[in-house]
Length: 432
Image (cartoon, rainbow, N blue to C red; front, side, top):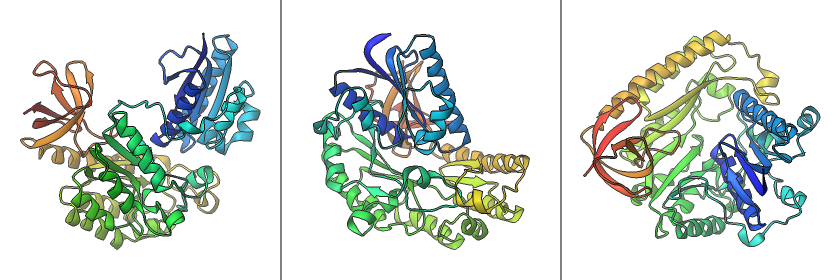
């Protein structure tokens, strides 16, 4: 057990990761050694940053907490602290159920943790963090919370109302990260398109992205978690005019039938959804769209599901995920709808939808063979350098594999490559 060493374990999404990175920097500024997601945690203190979004994530968070409590009981650890979404949502219950944890913190009060360790928040490090990603890219969180009230979603219960970060502060953080070698930014929020409405009384995302794109050293900007209703279409122009704004949009659509969209409180119609996808493709030629869908929502009929399948075949999404509805306590749908779709039907629909997407993904990948593309190299793994194109976000999207024995490449550098072969989810290439 290493003295003055803190192991931080992050579960859940990239938004949590940013919080962990900020806490790590604060701990460092207070004289601690810090590790992140270590395979063999060795510090005397562990901080677990939990996810509380859906059943599986909650289960993983609970199991991880119990594992570390076990280590504490065996004397391999002195203190266990828990923060993040799960403890924000179930603070009281967790305190009662797992008393071995030294203290639970919510999602936003982790600064208290520093005080409890006898340290203070270092204001001069406010914009700094310890990057846990490869040093050429970083996640950039531009807001917290969500004002959308989708009937199935517990996130507003956990994170509260939408709060945008001031634009100047975000741009200062980008400049700081660029000075540390970051070239690629994954812009994230619970809901990107709402950015600025609280602070500036207007959709300010297009202006923010334009100003980011003008900062020297910013090579790629990629946008995550947009919402289809009232989409700020001025963004199309920004994407077209700035080469460093990736032609990529991660926009969660969830469904397409009017019946489902209404029951889900999505405030968008089937027709508007079709029109938005058409407009994306017309205004930003070559754009790659990533989306997610939900099947088995209460009241989903076979007709609703057929409409969804037809839409997926028509839209030919470059990247698509799907999941089966699971009831989240406290949400509108948990209170007002009966979870009436049998599990086997949910699973069948999920499998059918993903099978359609699998064929589309394979077809779209195949079309890239023979094309020249720009690729950033993330890592070396076995016999291959692993890279990504502007159309691929880390962790979730396909990768480009380049044989290491052909040429020596630099991690974090970009290269022009020729795509030589396609598999369902990955591409193979050689450097030009």
